[in-house]
Amino acid sequence: MTDKIRIATCSLGGCFGCHMSILDIDERIAELAEVVQFDRSPLTDIKTCGPCDLGLIEGGLCNEENVEVLIEFRKNCRILVAVGACAITGGIPAMRNNCELDSCIEEAFVRSPGLYNAQIPNDPELPLLLDKVRPIQDAVTVDFFLPGCPPSADVIWTVLQQILNGQPLVIPAQELRFD
Ligand code: SF4
Image (cartoon, rainbow, N blue to C red; front, side):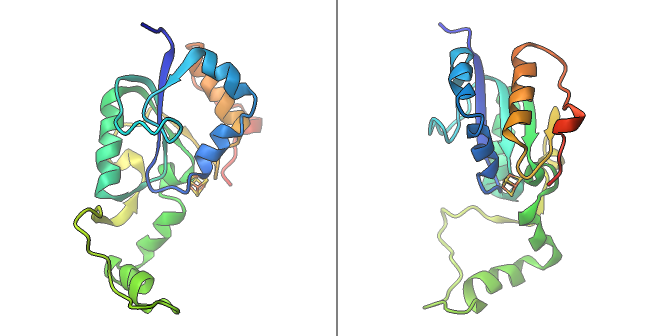
């Protein structure tokens, strides 16, 4: 039996840059490991999310699998935090929202220069793309938004400390960034 805080993390339509920022807390991760236990996360390679105190979501909703994973996190995580611009606004992947989905797919898989034997992938295991990339709050209730592309390691650390200490979640003005 453990009384450690359970944390789950995942990348939906993201680039893993926000996860890299989490790792950028550097040696403080040893301090974190004393008091938290990671559930589903790229850090553990656990594939399903169990009951957790905190869920950190990177990336927006690009496909149906992203929606399923997000709903699983919302069901299991007491506090859900949108980490980074892609989770909050759709971010870079949402640039495709300016075009029709069919046109994006053809541009990527058929019309791009240098393609050999160009064809649109249709393996049934591939998750279906959503018509538009959407922020995660379009599908579930989000408890806190941590902006930045990515948020700095220091602001991630600040918010983690607030959660671990049961304090209100507040981003100090000097740590707030949107780039
Ligand atoms: Fe990557 Fe920036 Fe999106 Fe984070 S917010 S997943 S760093 S593009």
